Length: 75
Figure 1: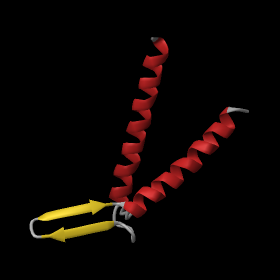
Figure 2 (figure 1 turned 180 degrees about the horizontal axis):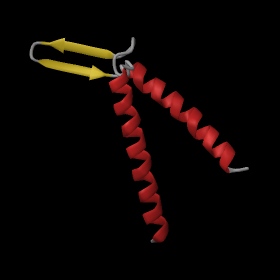
Figure 3 (figure 1 turned 180 degrees about the vertical axis):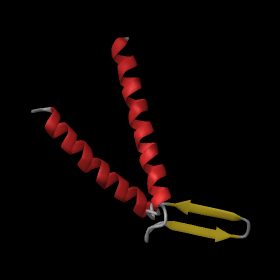
C-alpha cells in the first residue's frame, strides 16, 4: 500500500511540473497547439480541433526525456 501512495504522489508532482511548463510556454508565446499540421475545422457554430503536430512533438520530446532518465537511473 505504501508503494501505491508513493507512485501516486510522484505522478502528481510530475503532472504539476508538466502543467507548469505548459503554462510558461503559453506565456512566452511558444506556438504549442498552433503548429502547422494541427487540424482545425470551423463550420457553422461548431469547431473541431485536433493538435496532431503538437501531439507528435510532445510524444517525441517525452520519449527522449524518459529514455535519458531511465538510462541515468540504471547506472
